[in-house]
Amino acid sequence: MSARFVVGDRVTAPGLDGSGHTRLPGYLRDRRGIVIALRGSVPLADDRAEGAASPRIEALYTVAFEGRDVWGDACEPGVSVHADLWDSYLEKTT
Amino acid sequence: MSGVHDVGGKPGYGVIEREANEPPFHHEWELRVFALNRTLLAAGVYNLDEFRRAVERLPEEVYERASYYERWLLAIEELLRKKSALKALP
Amino acid sequence: MTKPHDHEHDHGDHDHSLHGASASMSGRVDALVTAFEREGVLHEGDVDRAAQAFMRGARPENGARVVARAWSDAGFRARLLEDANAALDELAIDMSHWVRVKLVALANTRDVHNLVVCTLCSCYPVGLLGPSPAWYKSDAYRARAVREPRRVLAEFGVRIPEETAIRVWDSTAELRYLVIPMRPDGTDEESEDELARRVTRDAMIGAALAR
Image (tube, rainbow over all chains, first blue to last red; front, side):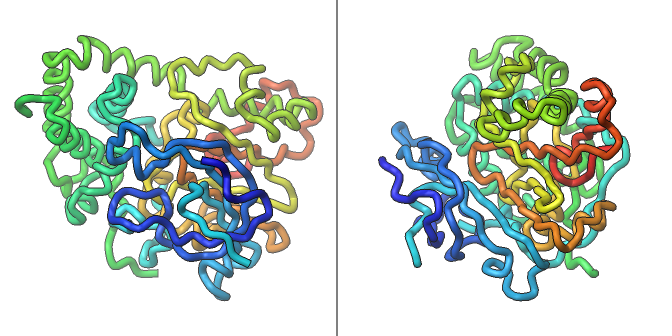
């Protein structure tokens, strides 16, 4: 599967539907961030956790989130949080 | 899915306890659990995400009361039951 | 600050252990190993050999060598920041005992301080740093590091100026992060070995400064 995003893209992280294992932390769900790096294509953790014989292979990105955007204005100054997220966890935004 | 393991940003935690001169493992059995997990992963009995999932699916009260490597042991036991790798667990 | 629960149960010998004392844990591990050996999934001694190889090979001295080289050699530092796995190959650190992962090096500067965590479990570059400490694996660190890193670092005795940004890296996939701490002042004349001795495991997580 080809990468849907490039470095600099603004994204949100709705994650995948379902009740299984995922590597999108709850605190980042639906938050807005920026893609800062492409990390190759790797098997989707959600599929691997089910023991899938052919897990989906997807682009992996490092996404940077401003602390204020994650925790609100009370966040400590100058803090950003980064996470490594699979393509299907993300949607493009403005 | 958010579960008991998904603690990023969860409020209510206090001082992070740190042990001076902490040994790599507090007990021999912890090192053995660590090495057992590695060996089983290398042998392809299960993959790392299956293992994480098994830890995440521990009942909440079990997860919270178990020590870190106890969670691993419980997860490995559960995985084996699930995969029927063992016909009878000891 | 009050805690509704004490979540810092990271030791195997406390009385609240669901399954009793470490002797019983030991018995359960042994029984599992034996059962696997009987099933042919493991061979006798596999687990012990894996344990020994791991303890021999996975040590913070590995990461410290990488940092000391990056401090001493600007070209290496640049290559390390560009492609850490390739740069690591230059140092011939024995990595045979650990699963090869994609490594990313993060340089601390006056403008940026990096801190590594795994909120979902406890992912960590064991091959370079050795076994992870209990505090890194604790629910408290995993909960607080992404939310209030300045306060966590201050509690650890690390004061980061307000003008310095803090980047927290949550290891959610199979990337592992190595922090290159700032080189202490007044160390220009030191050899790589001397420099490496200044680099602690905690500094390579971003939870301490180099000595």
